[in-house]
Image (tube, rainbow, N blue to C red; front, side):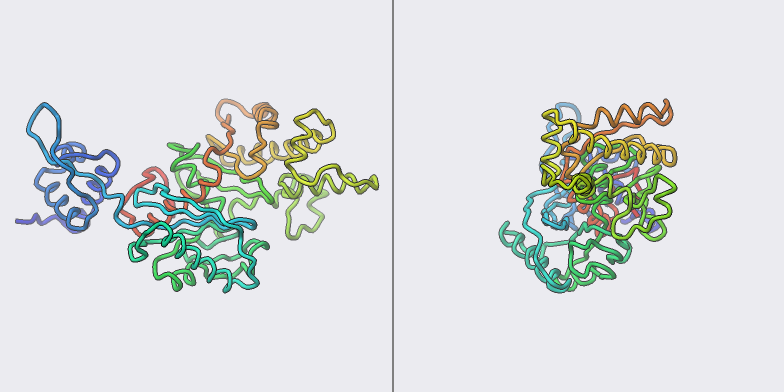
Length: 400
């Protein structure tokens, strides 16, 4: 005889049981009942339903030497899979992930040389099909796709509002709907820096943290925040566009177009622009062609290379201090190409920031350990949250 619990409470209990099995399993029905404070009869009813849905499965008897042996239940992380994608101006990263938001396989390819967004989308869909086939997966078991892209993204509707100049016609583009039409599964689209922060919360530096920021310093610069457990997007989904920060009255009078002022002084392209402008004023060619070369020279004691990096670091410290006064994060994670050379400047950065903070505003500054995996993990979480909302991967974080 089935209980007469209201459907809402029944679904809440079902979600609770599923999440307990996922997080703590394998568990017996008795152990689940103890952890959830749900009666054994109700747990058994819920478990039978989850087994029928193949969300969990039995793996044998409990080997505990004490008490009655119970059949153990395991979360079925192999029930379907998803694909996460990180779009970049020079490369595209792909991964397959299971329903436990674990990355199973990764692949990186050069960004397509496409003239139109339609050509790009067709190539992207074909790459996903090829990845699935190469791994021997059944495309019919594909559940969802998550795509991280540069630019301002309307997350709720899967629309790229303003995108990267390195991707073709990448604005006012309903990327989610078009990719869904290509592959026949739900598609979630999010800003790449924001997805990287969610990845850091899931598997990286920001685990168990409810106030954090990520600053991505690569060819350009961008940021993302979680404040009091809420991922911040802003009224126009443009939160975190720190490349447009200003620092002086003179900058207020200037017109900044594709790059904001902060991006011109604190990004890979900005660093090299400073180098080229400085040498051009002297009628000379710079001795370095890449940021890696500038850092390598600074590490060898080149005073001029060090001066360029010190200026970049000073502006980064000012931006971080301004952010701290408004949002009071616990940790700020640096990612992107410049962060790979952070060993050179991070001690100075921390010293400058610590000089202007106190016990209640002191912040940890760290570099990402996940690096290119962060947005792939982040899109796995966001994609699964869309198709499996009852699975609570980040219980203290509100993603929507």
